[in-house]
Image (cartoon, rainbow, N blue to C red; front, side):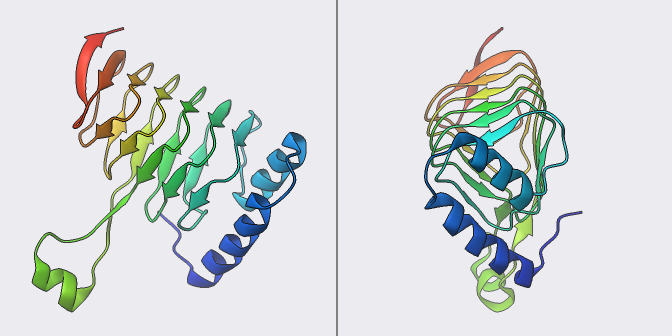
Length: 169
């Protein structure tokens, strides 16, 4: 279940600002990220700075993870990364949406969180956007600049706006 503690969110965001402004020392960044994001896996997890998150408590790593610079993780809901996942620069992963009905949006101010799950050995090209509720199957590659609006099976190359399967891998 996603953690959405506003006090903790503020504290983590303040720590993230400091991390994003720090000198480039890869080992120090890895150690800071492990503490900030409470990474428990023994495998390598490295997110190049700068990057952004919503809460920082709903990001889950399986190990051997790399994200290039300027990624955005809107983790109102859980974002689950399999092993050996690679993200290009400026990848955006959203877990939150809002009602389509304007009355619901205005009167209730609802946010709807849907988890995103990314399988093992997935590579997501730079500038791609992954929408709420999407599951990306193992070994799948997403072409740069794609907008993934629906789940994708394992072992495919997908690209476009919206992303579509181009071929099997």
